Every structure is written in structure tokens, then in C-alpha cells.
Length: 139
Image 1 (cartoon, one colour):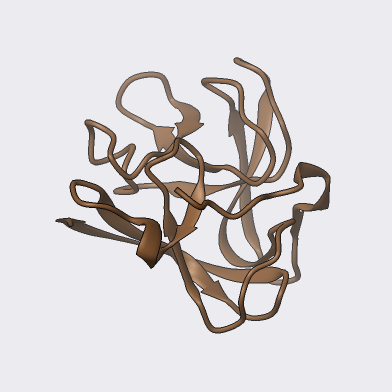
Image 2: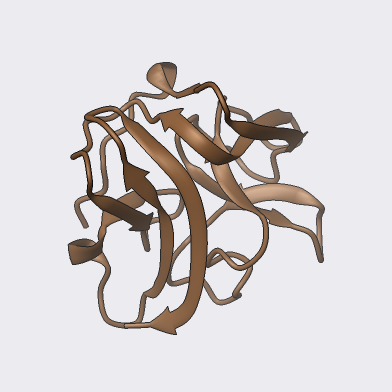
């Protein structure tokens, strides 16, 4: 997998971002994709394109961690809008939830058995406009 390489200290919500606060259900790094485990813990966990549950694959509430947090610590999450992702991306390119927990990858790196969840489309070399879309389809 060739996930984008995120520098956590460079992850920043942009104007127009929708954010919310919660509690980390695992160790999370800024820039990782997380989902709200609303049925079990009520905490944010790492999302994963080949996880066993639909929620973990992006069905439901999903976002990008804006800060790092250990288990049971406060976590800010951006769920919509432009985000400076802390990585180099290609404008006009769509990015997807990776099968590597919390990762972001281009479509070419989503493999057989992985579920396709759109994270968003890059609007510049450093910004992705988040627009999470869970397809429910595996390759």
C-alpha cells in the first residue's frame, strides 16, 4: 500500500470545516481516518477499508483526527470541508480509505476485498475537500 505520508503537526482544519469533539477509543495520530463506534464504545476508532464491520469501513460517522490522542483522551475530528492534510497530494485526485487502519490512499492502492470509501478530492497540493462516501462495495 502506498498511503499518503502525513506529517501530523501539519494537519489543520480550514475555513468552512465541520468538526466535532469526542474521545479516542485507541491511540490516534493527527491525519488518520477515524469512525465513531456508536454501537459499542461511543468513541472514535481507526477506520479500515477491509475491517469486519461496515461502521469501521466508513458507513456512518467518519472523519480525520485533528490531533493525536491516546486511549480515552479528547479527540477533535473534522468530518466535512477542506483540510490541510499534512501531506503532498495531487489536485483533482480522489483519495480513499486505506486498508491500513487510519490511512488514506489513491484508488489504485485499494485491492481486492477492500471496501471503497471516498475520503475526498484534493483541491491543491496540500488540501483535500472531505466528502466521505461509503459505497458498500468491495473490489
